[in-house]
Image (cartoon, rainbow, N blue to C red; front, side, top):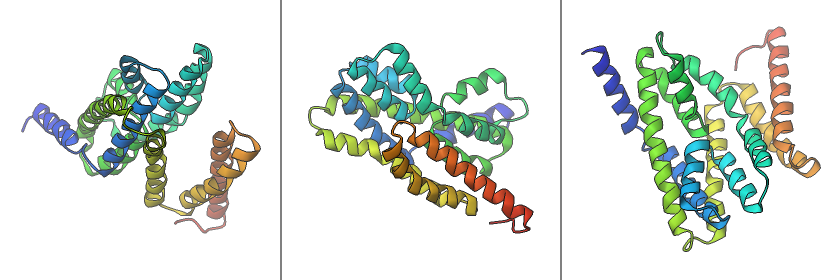
Amino acid sequence: MTRRSSKARAFLHGAAGAPSVPVLVVTITFIGFGALARDTGLNMFQALFVSLSVFALPGQVVLADEAGKGSGLAAVAFAVMLTSVRLLPMTYSLFPVMRGKNTPLWLEIILSHFVAITVWLEAMRRLPQRPKELRVAYFSGFALVMMAGLLIATAAGYFLAAQVPPPVAAGMVFLTPVYFFLSLLETSRNIADRGAVLVGVVLGPLLYMLVPGLDLVLTGLIGGTACYAFMRWRRKQGGGGP
């Protein structure tokens, strides 16, 4: 089998592997986003463009909400940027796992657009099981099919908005963070991972009441730093490991 045919087969395997329970959950949430986009006054083209260009549900919800309120472009862009900062460390952790020896920089830049919570979780779970030189092709197939499905879900939600009550649409959007939380618990490898999740559960609601707007940033900063410091101390004491 030639190198090109191997990559083509890996691409098709990635595309065929896209339909799964996690992707189904995200698809439902994008149906909810389509309904939300219509409710905030976006037209169909704008709703699809938001899903295509942002490709991360929290940022999309913030954009639609701020646009519906009539906020200025700079304020909307800044709000979306803040919600998307979390994707940077995901990208940094994923690409060393995914890239091959000769992966061109331009292709990495394009593929970085597809890094979102579910894509990242599934890629980190699936890619190590595949040969290094075929991981980019596999990821490309998975990500492209997933994006196509989510665009269709956005359009479906937009057309169904009249039939979907607002509480139902909000509930569908909420499925993604629930799935992410459960996935974090399942993929936790050591006490620091599990501790970070626990600290987030405790600190999140508390900081939301004290400093709304900075609650997520501070929760991640405080919880992550505390767990990292604990693991450093534990290793120095000779208690490394899970």
